[in-house]
Length: 446
Image (tube, rainbow, N blue to C red):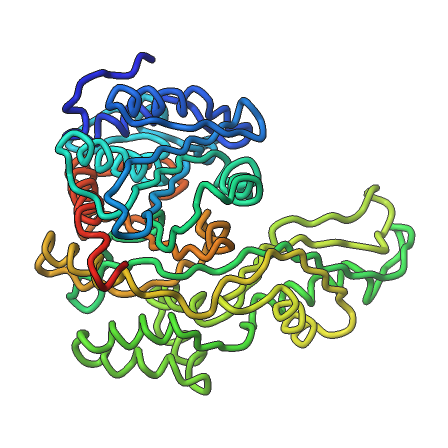
């Protein structure tokens, strides 16, 4: 695909997103090089120099820098261009065709996160084309491999080239700025914190034996008890600074009875019982108040007629900001008891308390764009590349605004068949990101 040299391309972020979607960057294996090449040429056409760095030449990362006046620190825009697979998903339209149908751009990555990268590119290209005065440098990082641990992308850059991010205090990235509705109010969550991912290994043991003889209380029975316990019990309640702030700000603007119900979530003595009564609404709050695990892979047994003596269950663990893998391990040992051996592989914990310095500016931009917007701080129950940049002291804000209609289920579309985004939402987001570039560097942000 030959990149456009149209100097007005920034006015059509959906067209940029469409081009990005048409590169199949399914991870694994990624193969992001062609897509990065398109972005490189797009920026080169606008006179913006770029640097390409790669742990693997097939999986490069791009760094671009738009100079500012030097009166504020640099601002980082960071996004990934790899996507998850589409295998066995019944798509209505081809996932890598990037078709625009009935006002929606369809394709893998439309939401996560080629649409977001297109917003960042449009904002940066606009600032260049219009000669926008920038207080500080704007640094754009388009990276590979976010969907599979980030070791070839943000993890590689932070470990091997930290100097590229010297002086940066704030970053914009995924995952926030889209609306959700509760109690007749339209909230726009801005991600200021995220949980950390851990690999948990639970091992149960028992006597081996011949499959023809009944086995009571063996490894399989212990596995069943373990899984039942995890299915029927939560780990302990934890009220983090971000969780408290989010719930308190929501409660302040919600009508009765929600304005009384939500603050009760902040009382550990009431939290779990209230979540049980909330029904589907609890799904948005439960992981923000607990460390969690989900069993995902089971290893055990080699022959049908041999009772296994050892079964290992791999689990996806998620820890709240400020909590380590060791803390999760202790909670699981306390819940499951001595008959289950627990081991945890975890990255360093994320910060318990975020830097909220840029939050007022982002909130004001959303309120101007949508007068009914209620911006709130948000903790993502998943992980992003922001966890790598935080090691350099950089606070990432999930800020890719999209004015999605009320009947559009953002979470149900991520990583699913028929991923799509309204073209209008990409315009909305690109304009919001551009306004951040315009305003960043005011006294309260510098």
